[in-house]
Image (cartoon, rainbow, N blue to C red):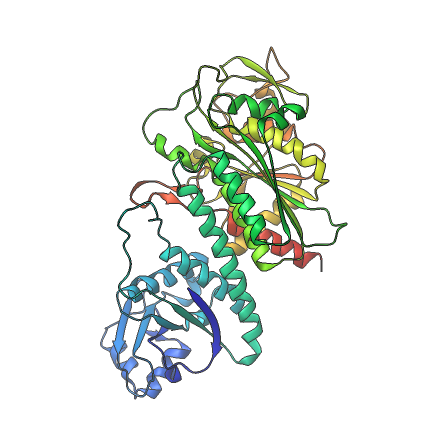
Length: 499
């Protein structure tokens, strides 16, 4: 898809379709008033007759409107102006895309950028229009023998800005929107691939490929023998149950000052999670291919940073394994030694994500990080607590947590902070090791984070539990690409704060 920005009146756009907002109670937007005046009251007459009310979800496609140069005018209902927020704006753009796909138009001039979204500027609206459009157009059909293609697919969107003074700002928003959207797309593709294709080795190859595409990116991969030398007994205790060797992938994006401490993202990469000896129920087990969505989001955000050539240093660490119930797989009751030297009693082999993450978090120390943020589909308890809307957030540093909460509000990819009080640490006590890998029935998301916190004492750290947001089930089953948008916004905010 091609995206660009332009200033100019809607009636003068020589293009396939001009998209115009209309608000609830039949209120015309600025661009609708201009079209109405040029067409001698045609739009207001239609509204007066009740052809479109302006409610959210209303659409009306018009052809050959008098005194306009476009082939079509699409009126989009936006609801009440004062109620428009990120979610509403997203729905408005999706309604536009669905209608346009059936219209035959391929090149579009969108005036939805004039919609008032609370405390959001034109650049935000352009960037998030692109993310919404690409989200609505996304299809994962590369594994189908017959691919469904639109007869006349959408090819180009032009976003309206108010005068030449906003062109540069708009063009930067286009670049950001396209890069972040491409990162989300990449994370979705990786998540949607089945476990027999997206293996630890495949993730490693995709990470190496990223380095070949960008001069500022370097990828290295530790094999199991390398991890043995480093003492990563927790990670290796998971991978030994699979015939697919585990990997520890490191992606370094270096475009900031050499003295600048890097942001480190650590992504859980369990490419298929059977539960191991603590076998999961068979129902919906196919969705356990999504247990590597944390890893996918790290690759996605590194891709976005590199595409935008952001002046920052970012490191992605991806511990990646399969969790399978082989004859030499870990058993409940086994005790392993982590890279940190702390010992862990494995009471449940299905609590494997924290075992691979804890060694990766210890490994992160070598980069002398500014902050470390891990991203993991870690606990079903997070879905029980928060549902499918925000990711769970826990942290040992309140300023870092606040920065992530703020980035979530800006991006619309929200998270919600849970407490991580010392009271919960007692649930991890073990009679036979330094700690157990589960904390019992209560507060499962919190005790998982408490476990990880024992390996993050040397730096500022946050944990994002994305179990509820990384993929959708049912009719619309598929990876969401979250939280690439949140992480990218966090990086952009850090750059802005350091200027």
